[in-house]
Length: 265
Image (tube, rainbow, N blue to C red; front, side):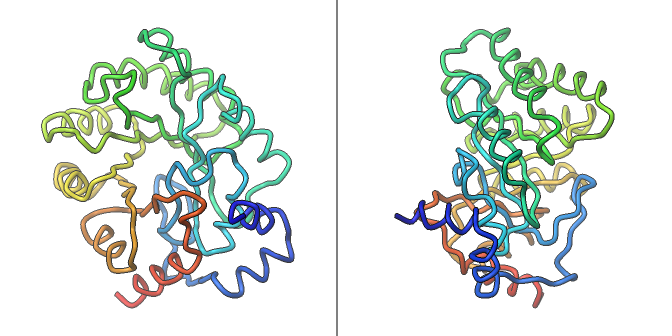
């Protein structure tokens, strides 16, 4: 029922306007320039909220400045091609759209996984504002291995050079990384043109902020319940905060509460 409600809000201009009257919050003080994109505020939604590209405009009406669709693979029904189709039918209103690429189900070899990422990246490049390469799951990928991450990421960065406009590429990393693994990955990012990382743990966020001296964009991905928790992530070095939730657990009033808290600081 709640999914149907969000889908209705997302697809109806009048409903979005009413929703925005109650839950939206705007302030020029909250605008942030991150990886050369203008975020109207630092609060958005992480992958897992909108895997089928149905609810993103409802999140925008509730005050979020960005939504990361996915995780999306190339071959899966409801994957990258479906998300592109949805965005072509209904463009994003007042928010930026990222997409989280993962490998196709059943792909195990490095060559197959690299192809999966490249296929998804090339197909969707013109339709999203930024891309996350997903290394957050251990199911088929050695996510803590910088060599594997480089093997997947290098072809993406090379492919990006062929396009007429620059599209930010970030890495979504695993919460179980050891400090030495995270630092090795961050070193690769800094040396090779990766635009930022998404991290799911506050301890990793603090480690990354210290290693990069606060000069590298970090999106904190977290199951946030209060405005104070979000403010603490920003204070710890996050450039942006991505709320981790399913559509059923989305609280429309939370982004506004967070933004009010951040503006007072």
